[in-house]
Image 1: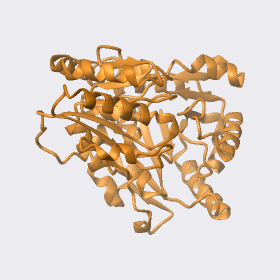
Image 2: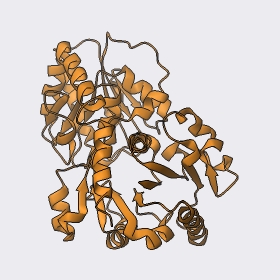
Image 3: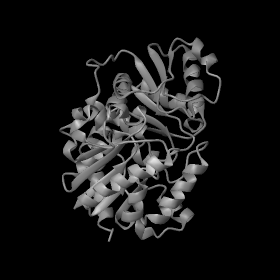
Length: 380
């Protein structure tokens, strides 16, 4: 089966999925370089509208992971420049017609591949990363583009099972055309890790990712302060890392030397090293779908404390790979953190369970790719 994978998103999950798919399919990968912080490709270094992957310096580290001679990097432009955007979309479509794929996987509802969506829609499988838009992020243009693509593309695949029935019911879709798979570990981060030695004497708690109201960060901060005030937990620290604006005043928390704020975009090297040095990652989200944060943590076999929302309980087997907690409660975060702080053997057992399940078992990328292949067989 010849497959074209059209992406505008980060390389994180895509490289791993493509690496697994190419064991059974002939895969051509298209990725847009628009904002460097999205996929770490500097579009100003690109001299052509479409550049072959072997000529893109930032991709060369992945030469044994994806087929660079079948990878195409698009020199993107913002949606406001609609004429140029549609011209680029046309150029991509011309290349796709030469490749003549059996199936096209599309991971977005942007204008970058809109011409191809019109001409190849019957061959398309659309990845719906967010079946329902996050709290505070329900933007009009996103809703409009999603509606257009949902109408054009019949076959869709979600990355969690929990939201499938609600998604079908909400949009009145035919259940036979809605498929599911899952995320596995973000292997690409291991290509960026530079730290060689793990400092194990300190219990490092890590939150990372885009700062947004739905992330529930204040509940984690309040919980950590409660732990500090007991003075029963030496050698403990909390890092909040990521770009974005806080929806509450963080000044009161800056008085604690045990709390570190890294309010900036994290490049892969920074992120890989932060996770590598952590003891546990916390996702105190108020709502969620699936989470790349969990898969980034699992790439380094780090247990995750996460709230019982969206597909997170599917990703984290409670008490085996982390701890699932209720939302909007600092108290339950305190209890979960103390449980792992006081039982380092449990932490190690959870790391081993992550490795068995996600690296070699039923949640590996090979298993995820098999579900994509089954979905693609449904496309006629």
